[in-house]
Length: 202
Length: 202
Image 1 (cartoon, each protein chain N blue to C red):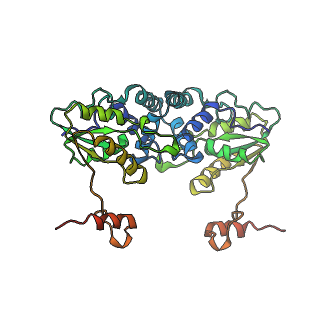
Image 2: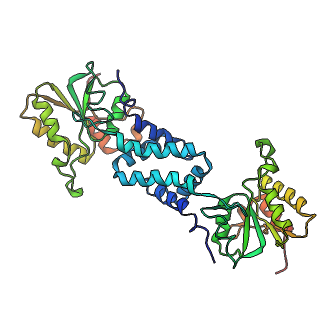
Image 3: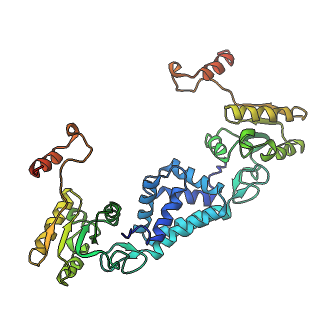
């Protein structure tokens, strides 16, 4: 018996491409493919172009490794930022989160991951050398290690801290403790541990 | 203060395009956009091409209105199918569901929707005329109205039935009743109603 899934090759191919995206299962992929089939060609053309443009236009800033269309990025190029203060984050997404607070007056340095030997990610796979170079160039006064408060993040932060020790720069990290707005009753042991050890005068 | 969302225009644009897809919120759209940025360019190129191909290559079969890259579609062109038996469905997706059962030996007719005057969908917006034409051509023996068992589906089925009455063709519909595998305890009133009225000898 003939099946009719085969002959609509382009529909099957689109479904397969969508299925390769994170969080998109077979049912969603089918729904998305049919959606595009129903929309005007302009809609498909805009999506198609946007997908390629992001690969063709977005690159990393050669100074801080933030994603950007222009090198240096708008933050590194901004004379009003505090270029002596460098916030080190794991991923470009982390930079977006910090930047969205509107509280950072300094600049950034994106490591592009964390050290994870079991996953084959060694220090030299990250942008640590470039960070040391920035510090050695002399204009950096404070490095804030704003990595994820996880085992891998902490390990990477310690490694970087040990490398920075020899250089004339202050190394800090964001404070830890109870999540504001959370309930003590539901706090994790590690959250409580950080909060208790880090207690300060009111 | 400079924000860094603006300058990465192509990333913002891709996020916006993804957000226009059904079931994709702002967070998923961001995750998808970053995913594409991380994957090799080939990945983006394949997705980009698949999105356009589906619009450029897929059309409707002129006989049954199924989606196809070749006209007539592989089902209408298959000499081993029962061309005297036509299963009428609302959407191409319904055809896929029926076809996947492997139980249909006949052919199909896709209405491209159901009558819904409140949404501005009148009988002439569907492929009803083409169905009548197929029946009038003389080779169709049975029309199975396999529309959705909903108010709109039933209304559309009744309308088509009334038009087919004058023609020499038998009109049937799939049986209704309890969903196999479901529990009586959780059956809806309309499911029970159909099951009770439609009871048959064992």
